[in-house]
Image 1 (cartoon, rainbow, N blue to C red):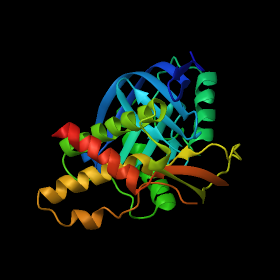
Image 2: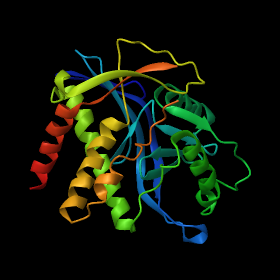
Image 3: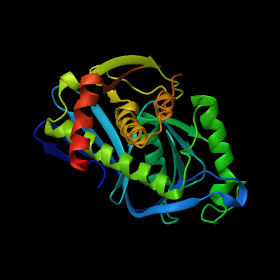
Image 4: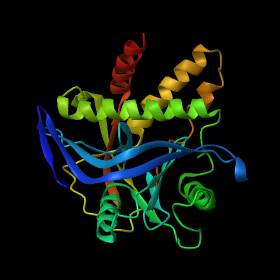
Length: 279
């Protein structure tokens, strides 16, 4: 049920959208027929809103089954079909498809959620063949990447490497999203861990903004994921990884909006927690 709200010791979690079935895939590096498209999960699709009671910081997440990823006002979602959406993150490109039984009113509700909680764009669609055809994502992918590079700069790119490396990044992103979202409502995330800041983000939809609240930046997740990857790369002897760590984070820098991200103290704190679990 949409709107279901659960109370936690330091905040609330609200299901702001839920549908019983969807397919999630990840797009890897490749060209033409060599483009890899891996189905990650098939299951219930849920959009959750986490709000910390005292600080009013928020985080919005998406999940299909047990796989979770962030939704933020400075990251992109592109509608590429009647029931198909692409999510653009640093090094990752996800495709989400709702089934044919999902009616237009439900899709419109999801679209309103995206308008409020992310940098949402609609791609003209209808000429790329049936959405559930195997060639659909190969047809729309160049248009998605074109939009991403226009908005996010030429530094935006998919993660290089084999499918196992991409899957590892997917799993790290999911695990970090779970850690940070749970930390908001359990009190593990402290006010001393975050910095609030105001940025100008492209906002054609004139969304309401309450400056008592702070939306999470995509970097609240990507900073941790990138730092972990850099640590492992440097440990393995790849010193170039330190230079790559300064690339753009897949956020749109183009309405004024209040965002939050981890400061140096918070990043160090959560990195220690992650590394402790791996030891």
